[in-house]
Length: 483
Image (cartoon, rainbow, N blue to C red; front, side, top):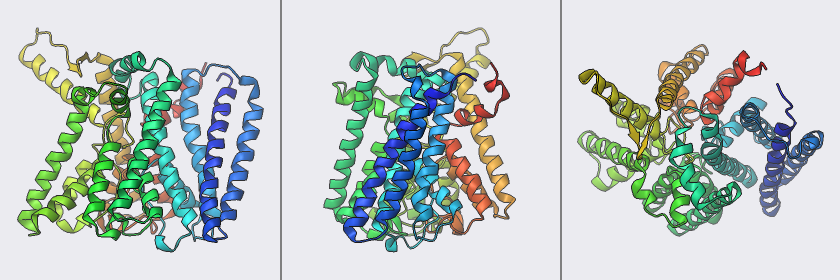
Protein backbone atom coordinates (compact mmCIF):
# COMPACT_ATOMS: atom_id res chain seq x y z
CA UNK A 1 0.00 0.00 0.00
CA UNK A 2 1.22 3.48 -0.86
CA UNK A 3 1.98 6.27 1.65
CA UNK A 4 -0.93 6.70 4.07
CA UNK A 5 0.19 10.01 5.53
CA UNK A 6 -2.45 12.01 3.59
CA UNK A 7 -5.09 9.74 5.13
CA UNK A 8 -3.84 10.34 8.66
CA UNK A 9 -3.60 14.08 8.05
CA UNK A 10 -7.27 14.18 7.01
CA UNK A 11 -8.33 12.01 9.95
CA UNK A 12 -6.43 14.28 12.32
CA UNK A 13 -8.28 17.31 10.98
CA UNK A 14 -11.64 15.61 11.49
CA UNK A 15 -10.71 14.68 15.05
CA UNK A 16 -9.83 18.33 15.74
CA UNK A 17 -13.38 19.24 14.74
CA UNK A 18 -14.71 16.53 17.06
CA UNK A 19 -12.58 17.84 19.94
CA UNK A 20 -13.92 21.37 19.38
CA UNK A 21 -17.49 20.01 19.39
CA UNK A 22 -16.89 18.48 22.83
CA UNK A 23 -16.54 21.95 24.29
CA UNK A 24 -20.22 22.72 23.65
CA UNK A 25 -21.63 20.13 26.09
CA UNK A 26 -18.85 21.11 28.52
CA UNK A 27 -20.15 24.69 28.48
CA UNK A 28 -23.75 23.49 28.92
CA UNK A 29 -22.84 21.33 31.92
CA UNK A 30 -20.75 24.10 33.49
CA UNK A 31 -23.62 26.56 33.09
CA UNK A 32 -25.95 24.00 34.64
CA UNK A 33 -23.61 23.59 37.62
CA UNK A 34 -22.95 19.97 36.73
CA UNK A 35 -19.44 18.62 37.38
CA UNK A 36 -19.74 16.54 34.22
CA UNK A 37 -18.18 19.43 32.27
CA UNK A 38 -14.78 18.08 33.36
CA UNK A 39 -15.54 14.84 31.51
CA UNK A 40 -15.93 16.69 28.21
CA UNK A 41 -12.89 18.87 28.82
CA UNK A 42 -10.71 15.80 29.45
CA UNK A 43 -12.21 14.04 26.42
CA UNK A 44 -11.57 17.10 24.23
CA UNK A 45 -7.94 17.34 25.36
CA UNK A 46 -7.31 13.63 24.75
CA UNK A 47 -8.90 13.83 21.30
CA UNK A 48 -7.01 17.00 20.41
CA UNK A 49 -3.69 15.54 21.60
CA UNK A 50 -4.14 12.46 19.41
CA UNK A 51 -5.33 14.53 16.45
CA UNK A 52 -2.41 16.95 16.58
CA UNK A 53 0.07 14.09 17.03
CA UNK A 54 -1.29 12.34 13.96
CA UNK A 55 -1.24 15.55 11.92
CA UNK A 56 2.34 16.32 12.92
CA UNK A 57 3.42 12.78 12.02
CA UNK A 58 1.75 13.20 8.62
CA UNK A 59 2.86 16.80 8.10
CA UNK A 60 5.12 15.92 5.16
CA UNK A 61 2.06 14.86 3.18
CA UNK A 62 0.89 18.44 2.68
CA UNK A 63 -0.34 18.88 -0.86
CA UNK A 64 -0.36 15.15 -1.59
CA UNK A 65 -3.29 13.91 -3.63
CA UNK A 66 -5.38 11.18 -2.02
CA UNK A 67 -5.85 8.17 -4.31
CA UNK A 68 -9.00 6.06 -4.66
CA UNK A 69 -7.55 3.32 -2.45
CA UNK A 70 -6.60 5.83 0.18
CA UNK A 71 -10.11 7.25 0.04
CA UNK A 72 -11.57 3.84 0.92
CA UNK A 73 -9.25 3.67 3.93
CA UNK A 74 -9.91 7.28 4.92
CA UNK A 75 -13.69 6.89 4.84
CA UNK A 76 -13.76 3.84 7.11
CA UNK A 77 -10.89 4.91 9.37
CA UNK A 78 -12.43 8.34 9.94
CA UNK A 79 -15.76 6.87 11.05
CA UNK A 80 -14.07 4.28 13.31
CA UNK A 81 -11.70 6.71 15.04
CA UNK A 82 -14.32 9.42 15.44
CA UNK A 83 -16.61 6.82 17.03
CA UNK A 84 -13.83 5.66 19.38
CA UNK A 85 -13.08 9.17 20.63
CA UNK A 86 -16.75 10.16 20.70
CA UNK A 87 -17.30 7.23 23.08
CA UNK A 88 -14.88 8.63 25.71
CA UNK A 89 -17.40 10.98 27.38
CA UNK A 90 -19.95 8.15 27.61
CA UNK A 91 -17.33 5.81 29.10
CA UNK A 92 -15.87 8.09 31.78
CA UNK A 93 -19.02 9.97 32.77
CA UNK A 94 -20.91 8.63 35.78
CA UNK A 95 -23.94 7.46 33.79
CA UNK A 96 -23.60 3.69 34.20
CA UNK A 97 -22.32 2.75 30.75
CA UNK A 98 -19.71 0.06 30.21
CA UNK A 99 -17.01 0.55 27.53
CA UNK A 100 -19.05 -1.61 25.15
CA UNK A 101 -22.19 0.41 25.85
CA UNK A 102 -20.24 3.65 25.32
CA UNK A 103 -18.94 2.40 21.96
CA UNK A 104 -22.42 1.27 20.92
CA UNK A 105 -23.97 4.64 21.85
CA UNK A 106 -21.26 6.58 20.02
CA UNK A 107 -21.50 4.41 16.90
CA UNK A 108 -25.28 4.73 16.93
CA UNK A 109 -24.90 8.49 17.18
CA UNK A 110 -22.22 9.10 14.56
CA UNK A 111 -23.98 6.78 12.08
CA UNK A 112 -27.34 8.51 12.84
CA UNK A 113 -28.88 5.12 13.68
CA UNK A 114 -30.56 6.20 16.91
CA UNK A 115 -30.47 2.84 18.72
CA UNK A 116 -29.70 3.46 22.37
CA UNK A 117 -28.60 1.58 25.47
CA UNK A 118 -29.31 4.52 27.78
CA UNK A 119 -32.34 4.58 30.05
CA UNK A 120 -33.89 7.21 32.32
CA UNK A 121 -32.67 9.90 29.93
CA UNK A 122 -34.40 12.77 31.74
CA UNK A 123 -32.07 12.25 34.73
CA UNK A 124 -28.87 12.38 32.66
CA UNK A 125 -26.60 15.48 32.62
CA UNK A 126 -27.64 17.96 29.91
CA UNK A 127 -24.16 17.81 28.38
CA UNK A 128 -24.51 14.07 27.71
CA UNK A 129 -27.90 14.58 26.08
CA UNK A 130 -26.54 17.40 23.93
CA UNK A 131 -23.48 15.32 23.00
CA UNK A 132 -25.69 12.53 21.69
CA UNK A 133 -27.52 15.07 19.52
CA UNK A 134 -24.30 16.71 18.29
CA UNK A 135 -22.91 13.33 17.21
CA UNK A 136 -25.95 12.69 15.05
CA UNK A 137 -25.84 16.19 13.57
CA UNK A 138 -22.16 15.72 12.65
CA UNK A 139 -22.87 12.27 11.23
CA UNK A 140 -25.75 13.65 9.18
CA UNK A 141 -23.73 16.29 7.38
CA UNK A 142 -20.90 13.78 7.01
CA UNK A 143 -23.04 11.28 5.15
CA UNK A 144 -24.34 14.04 2.86
CA UNK A 145 -20.84 15.05 1.80
CA UNK A 146 -19.77 11.44 1.46
CA UNK A 147 -22.72 10.38 -0.69
CA UNK A 148 -22.50 13.42 -2.98
CA UNK A 149 -18.73 13.77 -3.27
CA UNK A 150 -16.96 10.56 -2.25
CA UNK A 151 -19.15 7.57 -3.15
CA UNK A 152 -19.75 8.59 -6.80
CA UNK A 153 -15.97 8.66 -7.26
CA UNK A 154 -15.62 5.24 -5.63
CA UNK A 155 -18.48 3.84 -7.75
CA UNK A 156 -20.19 2.30 -4.72
CA UNK A 157 -23.47 0.47 -5.32
CA UNK A 158 -24.43 2.43 -8.42
CA UNK A 159 -23.57 5.81 -6.91
CA UNK A 160 -21.39 6.56 -9.94
CA UNK A 161 -24.68 7.40 -11.68
CA UNK A 162 -24.78 10.63 -9.68
CA UNK A 163 -21.43 11.73 -11.01
CA UNK A 164 -23.13 12.18 -14.38
CA UNK A 165 -26.72 12.70 -13.25
CA UNK A 166 -26.20 15.54 -10.78
CA UNK A 167 -22.54 16.44 -10.38
CA UNK A 168 -22.23 17.98 -13.84
CA UNK A 169 -25.24 20.19 -13.14
CA UNK A 170 -23.85 21.19 -9.78
CA UNK A 171 -20.48 22.06 -11.27
CA UNK A 172 -22.10 24.49 -13.69
CA UNK A 173 -23.71 26.37 -10.80
CA UNK A 174 -21.01 25.82 -8.18
CA UNK A 175 -17.73 25.35 -10.06
CA UNK A 176 -15.63 24.94 -6.92
CA UNK A 177 -15.95 21.99 -4.55
CA UNK A 178 -15.42 24.24 -1.54
CA UNK A 179 -18.30 26.43 -2.65
CA UNK A 180 -20.51 23.35 -2.98
CA UNK A 181 -19.52 22.17 0.51
CA UNK A 182 -20.21 25.60 1.98
CA UNK A 183 -23.64 25.61 0.33
CA UNK A 184 -24.46 22.24 1.88
CA UNK A 185 -23.24 23.44 5.27
CA UNK A 186 -25.18 26.68 5.03
CA UNK A 187 -28.41 24.93 4.08
CA UNK A 188 -27.91 22.30 6.79
CA UNK A 189 -27.32 24.93 9.47
CA UNK A 190 -30.19 27.09 8.23
CA UNK A 191 -32.66 24.22 8.26
CA UNK A 192 -31.48 23.22 11.74
CA UNK A 193 -32.16 26.73 13.04
CA UNK A 194 -35.61 26.71 11.43
CA UNK A 195 -36.32 23.34 13.06
CA UNK A 196 -35.28 24.69 16.47
CA UNK A 197 -37.62 27.65 16.06
CA UNK A 198 -40.47 25.42 14.86
CA UNK A 199 -40.11 23.04 17.80
CA UNK A 200 -39.94 25.95 20.24
CA UNK A 201 -43.10 27.53 18.80
CA UNK A 202 -44.82 24.11 18.91
CA UNK A 203 -44.23 23.91 22.66
CA UNK A 204 -40.79 22.43 23.36
CA UNK A 205 -38.39 24.05 25.80
CA UNK A 206 -35.30 25.62 24.23
CA UNK A 207 -32.89 22.84 25.26
CA UNK A 208 -35.23 20.09 24.06
CA UNK A 209 -35.85 22.02 20.84
CA UNK A 210 -32.12 22.27 20.12
CA UNK A 211 -31.43 18.59 20.84
CA UNK A 212 -34.40 17.36 18.84
CA UNK A 213 -33.69 19.68 15.90
CA UNK A 214 -30.13 18.33 15.69
CA UNK A 215 -31.44 14.75 15.57
CA UNK A 216 -34.47 15.40 13.36
CA UNK A 217 -32.75 16.97 10.39
CA UNK A 218 -29.96 14.39 10.62
CA UNK A 219 -32.70 11.71 10.74
CA UNK A 220 -30.89 10.27 13.75
CA UNK A 221 -33.67 9.97 16.31
CA UNK A 222 -31.93 10.42 19.66
CA UNK A 223 -34.26 12.12 22.13
CA UNK A 224 -33.90 13.65 25.57
CA UNK A 225 -36.64 11.36 26.93
CA UNK A 226 -37.16 7.60 27.03
CA UNK A 227 -40.60 8.08 25.45
CA UNK A 228 -39.04 10.02 22.56
CA UNK A 229 -41.40 12.47 20.83
CA UNK A 230 -44.29 10.71 22.58
CA UNK A 231 -43.17 12.40 25.81
CA UNK A 232 -44.66 15.70 24.64
CA UNK A 233 -48.07 14.29 23.60
CA UNK A 234 -48.36 17.19 21.15
CA UNK A 235 -49.80 16.91 17.62
CA UNK A 236 -48.03 20.18 16.69
CA UNK A 237 -44.64 18.77 17.68
CA UNK A 238 -45.33 15.50 15.85
CA UNK A 239 -46.28 17.28 12.61
CA UNK A 240 -43.22 19.51 12.93
CA UNK A 241 -41.07 16.39 13.21
CA UNK A 242 -42.75 14.88 10.14
CA UNK A 243 -41.97 17.97 8.03
CA UNK A 244 -38.30 18.14 8.97
CA UNK A 245 -37.79 14.37 8.76
CA UNK A 246 -39.09 14.58 5.19
CA UNK A 247 -36.70 17.45 4.47
CA UNK A 248 -33.88 15.32 5.87
CA UNK A 249 -34.88 12.63 3.37
CA UNK A 250 -34.50 14.95 0.37
CA UNK A 251 -31.21 14.98 -1.54
CA UNK A 252 -29.17 17.99 -0.49
CA UNK A 253 -27.88 18.12 -4.05
CA UNK A 254 -31.43 18.97 -5.10
CA UNK A 255 -31.70 21.53 -2.28
CA UNK A 256 -28.46 23.18 -3.39
CA UNK A 257 -29.74 23.44 -6.95
CA UNK A 258 -33.03 24.93 -5.73
CA UNK A 259 -31.34 27.48 -3.47
CA UNK A 260 -29.02 28.52 -6.30
CA UNK A 261 -31.79 29.41 -8.72
CA UNK A 262 -33.08 26.04 -9.91
CA UNK A 263 -36.37 25.51 -8.01
CA UNK A 264 -37.54 23.25 -10.85
CA UNK A 265 -35.05 20.69 -9.51
CA UNK A 266 -37.81 19.53 -7.15
CA UNK A 267 -40.10 18.86 -10.10
CA UNK A 268 -37.41 17.15 -12.17
CA UNK A 269 -36.07 14.79 -9.50
CA UNK A 270 -37.91 11.49 -9.98
CA UNK A 271 -36.21 10.08 -6.88
CA UNK A 272 -37.93 12.74 -4.76
CA UNK A 273 -41.27 11.87 -6.34
CA UNK A 274 -40.81 8.18 -5.52
CA UNK A 275 -39.74 8.98 -1.96
CA UNK A 276 -42.72 11.21 -1.22
CA UNK A 277 -45.02 8.80 -3.05
CA UNK A 278 -43.81 5.87 -0.95
CA UNK A 279 -44.42 7.83 2.26
CA UNK A 280 -47.91 8.81 1.10
CA UNK A 281 -48.96 5.34 -0.11
CA UNK A 282 -47.66 3.62 3.04
CA UNK A 283 -49.44 6.17 5.23
CA UNK A 284 -52.75 5.71 3.42
CA UNK A 285 -52.62 1.90 3.49
CA UNK A 286 -51.67 1.62 7.17
CA UNK A 287 -54.16 4.34 8.17
CA UNK A 288 -57.01 2.51 6.43
CA UNK A 289 -56.01 -0.74 8.12
CA UNK A 290 -55.71 1.02 11.47
CA UNK A 291 -59.18 2.55 11.17
CA UNK A 292 -60.62 -0.82 10.19
CA UNK A 293 -59.04 -2.80 13.01
CA UNK A 294 -58.12 -0.54 15.93
CA UNK A 295 -61.14 1.80 15.75
CA UNK A 296 -59.39 5.09 16.47
CA UNK A 297 -60.24 8.64 15.41
CA UNK A 298 -59.42 9.56 11.82
CA UNK A 299 -57.20 12.56 12.60
CA UNK A 300 -55.33 10.60 15.26
CA UNK A 301 -54.86 7.61 12.98
CA UNK A 302 -53.53 9.79 10.16
CA UNK A 303 -51.12 11.65 12.46
CA UNK A 304 -49.76 8.59 14.25
CA UNK A 305 -49.39 6.63 11.01
CA UNK A 306 -47.75 9.47 9.08
CA UNK A 307 -45.32 10.07 11.93
CA UNK A 308 -44.40 6.39 12.26
CA UNK A 309 -44.09 5.80 8.51
CA UNK A 310 -41.85 8.81 7.93
CA UNK A 311 -39.74 8.00 11.01
CA UNK A 312 -39.13 4.45 9.75
CA UNK A 313 -38.60 5.22 6.04
CA UNK A 314 -36.15 8.03 6.75
CA UNK A 315 -34.44 5.95 9.43
CA UNK A 316 -35.03 8.60 12.08
CA UNK A 317 -36.55 6.11 14.49
CA UNK A 318 -38.50 8.56 16.62
CA UNK A 319 -41.46 7.07 18.48
CA UNK A 320 -44.70 8.86 19.26
CA UNK A 321 -46.73 5.69 19.76
CA UNK A 322 -45.97 1.98 20.11
CA UNK A 323 -46.97 0.76 16.66
CA UNK A 324 -46.08 -2.74 17.81
CA UNK A 325 -49.49 -2.76 19.49
CA UNK A 326 -51.25 -2.29 16.16
CA UNK A 327 -51.08 -5.96 15.26
CA UNK A 328 -49.20 -8.32 12.95
CA UNK A 329 -49.88 -6.29 9.81
CA UNK A 330 -48.04 -3.30 11.25
CA UNK A 331 -45.09 -5.56 12.10
CA UNK A 332 -44.82 -6.72 8.50
CA UNK A 333 -45.39 -3.25 7.03
CA UNK A 334 -42.85 -1.44 9.19
CA UNK A 335 -40.29 -4.21 8.75
CA UNK A 336 -40.56 -3.76 4.97
CA UNK A 337 -40.32 0.03 5.27
CA UNK A 338 -37.03 -0.31 7.19
CA UNK A 339 -35.31 -1.22 3.94
CA UNK A 340 -36.48 1.73 1.83
CA UNK A 341 -34.59 4.85 2.97
CA UNK A 342 -34.78 8.30 1.46
CA UNK A 343 -33.01 9.98 -1.44
CA UNK A 344 -29.31 9.62 -2.09
CA UNK A 345 -27.40 12.62 -0.82
CA UNK A 346 -29.77 12.89 2.16
CA UNK A 347 -29.17 12.11 5.81
CA UNK A 348 -31.28 8.94 5.68
CA UNK A 349 -30.17 5.32 5.87
CA UNK A 350 -31.61 2.26 4.15
CA UNK A 351 -31.11 1.04 0.61
CA UNK A 352 -32.11 4.42 -0.90
CA UNK A 353 -34.96 5.10 -3.29
CA UNK A 354 -32.82 5.46 -6.42
CA UNK A 355 -31.64 1.84 -6.15
CA UNK A 356 -35.24 0.64 -6.11
CA UNK A 357 -35.81 2.79 -9.19
CA UNK A 358 -32.82 1.29 -10.99
CA UNK A 359 -33.91 -2.22 -10.03
CA UNK A 360 -37.41 -1.48 -11.36
CA UNK A 361 -35.98 -0.05 -14.59
CA UNK A 362 -33.75 -3.12 -14.99
CA UNK A 363 -36.71 -5.44 -14.40
CA UNK A 364 -38.75 -3.62 -17.05
CA UNK A 365 -35.83 -3.92 -19.45
CA UNK A 366 -35.69 -7.66 -18.79
CA UNK A 367 -39.42 -8.07 -19.48
CA UNK A 368 -39.01 -6.09 -22.72
CA UNK A 369 -36.16 -8.38 -23.78
CA UNK A 370 -38.29 -11.46 -23.14
CA UNK A 371 -41.11 -10.13 -25.32
CA UNK A 372 -38.83 -8.52 -27.95
CA UNK A 373 -35.61 -10.59 -28.04
CA UNK A 374 -34.12 -8.50 -30.84
CA UNK A 375 -35.48 -5.15 -29.70
CA UNK A 376 -33.34 -2.31 -28.35
CA UNK A 377 -34.46 -0.28 -25.38
CA UNK A 378 -32.10 1.91 -23.40
CA UNK A 379 -33.22 2.32 -19.77
CA UNK A 380 -33.12 5.90 -18.50
CA UNK A 381 -33.13 7.52 -15.08
CA UNK A 382 -33.94 11.23 -14.68
CA UNK A 383 -33.37 11.63 -18.42
CA UNK A 384 -29.94 9.92 -18.34
CA UNK A 385 -29.21 6.55 -19.93
CA UNK A 386 -28.37 3.99 -17.23
CA UNK A 387 -25.03 2.34 -18.07
CA UNK A 388 -24.93 -1.47 -17.69
CA UNK A 389 -22.31 -1.23 -14.94
CA UNK A 390 -24.71 0.85 -12.82
CA UNK A 391 -27.42 -1.80 -13.08
CA UNK A 392 -24.86 -4.45 -12.10
CA UNK A 393 -23.65 -2.36 -9.16
CA UNK A 394 -27.19 -1.82 -7.87
CA UNK A 395 -28.07 -5.50 -8.22
CA UNK A 396 -24.89 -6.43 -6.38
CA UNK A 397 -25.72 -3.94 -3.65
CA UNK A 398 -29.17 -5.47 -3.14
CA UNK A 399 -27.65 -8.94 -2.85
CA UNK A 400 -24.96 -7.80 -0.42
CA UNK A 401 -27.47 -5.80 1.62
CA UNK A 402 -29.78 -8.78 2.04
CA UNK A 403 -26.84 -11.08 2.78
CA UNK A 404 -25.55 -8.66 5.43
CA UNK A 405 -28.90 -8.53 7.20
CA UNK A 406 -29.15 -12.34 7.19
CA UNK A 407 -25.60 -12.86 8.47
CA UNK A 408 -26.05 -10.29 11.25
CA UNK A 409 -29.37 -11.88 12.24
CA UNK A 410 -27.76 -15.33 12.38
CA UNK A 411 -24.91 -14.01 14.53
CA UNK A 412 -27.42 -12.37 16.87
CA UNK A 413 -29.29 -15.67 17.08
CA UNK A 414 -26.13 -17.19 18.53
CA UNK A 415 -26.76 -14.98 21.59
CA UNK A 416 -30.17 -16.60 22.06
CA UNK A 417 -32.17 -13.64 20.76
CA UNK A 418 -35.62 -14.55 19.45
CA UNK A 419 -36.20 -14.42 15.70
CA UNK A 420 -38.18 -11.15 15.64
CA UNK A 421 -35.61 -9.35 17.78
CA UNK A 422 -32.65 -10.73 15.82
CA UNK A 423 -33.98 -10.06 12.30
CA UNK A 424 -35.41 -6.62 13.10
CA UNK A 425 -32.25 -5.58 14.97
CA UNK A 426 -30.16 -6.67 11.98
CA UNK A 427 -32.37 -4.79 9.50
CA UNK A 428 -32.48 -1.74 11.76
CA UNK A 429 -28.70 -1.64 12.29
CA UNK A 430 -27.74 -2.12 8.63
CA UNK A 431 -30.44 0.35 7.60
CA UNK A 432 -29.47 2.83 10.37
CA UNK A 433 -33.10 2.99 11.49
CA UNK A 434 -32.79 2.67 15.29
CA UNK A 435 -35.68 0.85 16.94
CA UNK A 436 -36.52 -2.68 15.91
CA UNK A 437 -39.67 -4.72 16.46
CA UNK A 438 -40.93 -6.64 19.46
CA UNK A 439 -40.97 -6.09 23.18
CA UNK A 440 -37.19 -5.84 23.65
CA UNK A 441 -35.99 -3.35 21.01
CA UNK A 442 -39.31 -2.05 19.72
CA UNK A 443 -40.36 1.62 19.85
CA UNK A 444 -41.05 1.34 23.58
CA UNK A 445 -37.82 -0.54 24.40
CA UNK A 446 -34.07 -0.20 23.80
CA UNK A 447 -30.88 -2.21 23.34
CA UNK A 448 -29.61 -2.06 26.95
CA UNK A 449 -30.44 -5.68 27.81
CA UNK A 450 -28.66 -7.23 24.82
CA UNK A 451 -25.40 -9.12 25.47
CA UNK A 452 -22.15 -7.23 24.87
CA UNK A 453 -21.28 -9.47 21.93
CA UNK A 454 -24.60 -8.65 20.25
CA UNK A 455 -24.01 -4.92 20.79
CA UNK A 456 -20.57 -5.13 19.13
CA UNK A 457 -22.03 -7.00 16.16
CA UNK A 458 -24.74 -4.36 15.79
CA UNK A 459 -22.20 -1.55 16.10
CA UNK A 460 -20.25 -3.03 13.17
CA UNK A 461 -23.52 -3.46 11.24
CA UNK A 462 -24.31 0.24 11.78
CA UNK A 463 -20.92 1.19 10.35
CA UNK A 464 -21.41 -1.22 7.46
CA UNK A 465 -24.79 0.23 6.56
CA UNK A 466 -23.78 3.87 6.99
CA UNK A 467 -20.77 3.50 4.67
CA UNK A 468 -22.77 1.67 1.98
CA UNK A 469 -21.35 -1.84 2.58
CA UNK A 470 -18.69 -1.96 -0.14
CA UNK A 471 -16.64 0.86 1.39
CA UNK A 472 -15.97 -1.27 4.47
CA UNK A 473 -16.01 -4.78 3.03
CA UNK A 474 -13.52 -3.98 0.27
CA UNK A 475 -10.88 -3.55 2.99
CA UNK A 476 -11.24 -7.26 3.80
CA UNK A 477 -10.35 -8.21 0.22
CA UNK A 478 -6.64 -9.25 -0.03
CA UNK A 479 -6.55 -7.83 -3.57
CA UNK A 480 -7.14 -4.35 -2.16
CA UNK A 481 -3.83 -4.42 -0.29
CA UNK A 482 -1.71 -5.72 -3.15
CA UNK A 483 0.23 -3.46 -5.41
